[in-house]
Length: 198
Image (cartoon, rainbow, N blue to C red; front, side, top):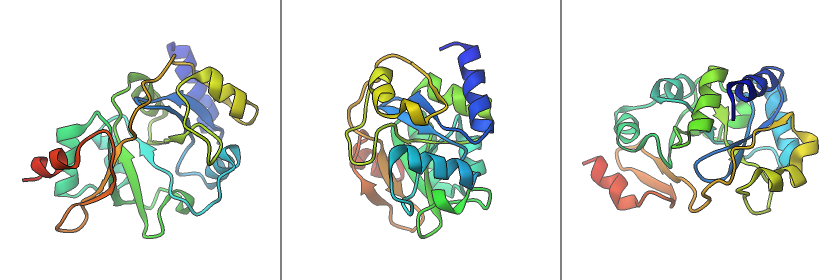
């Protein structure tokens, strides 16, 4: 992907559109999590019921902190595992629209080990959504060609970054309470997460 590709994707996002982009696991769908209209478009593209939280991707810890409140434990995990496949549940800041948040007002955010995804978030200037680029209920996809077959008519742009690695999803953890909680097992083993917090 070229800088021109990224610039074109940012223009689509700024208009409230949806962009398909590669991550360090599968292809994802980017939209502006501050705009209800953009998030509604994202749900329509996936055919996904509303009321389900949407994870976010950031270019760095500072950008993640602009979207959610990172406590001391979350900051330790970020230093230990970002960039990488660890998503951290944090309280959403007011700028995040309600449709992206979980029922308890939280979001899940991570900094991925994927240059293209980080470049897109950095160029956009804020976190982007990171739900998988497939129709709801269908398997996640690792190629732009597969994405194009299922969704292209509904999205503003498909960024082709080649084949993505696939594999396990990001490990999802909640460290808001005194005891950390594993929400979803994934690419980073739970015992590694616990050791990093000791």
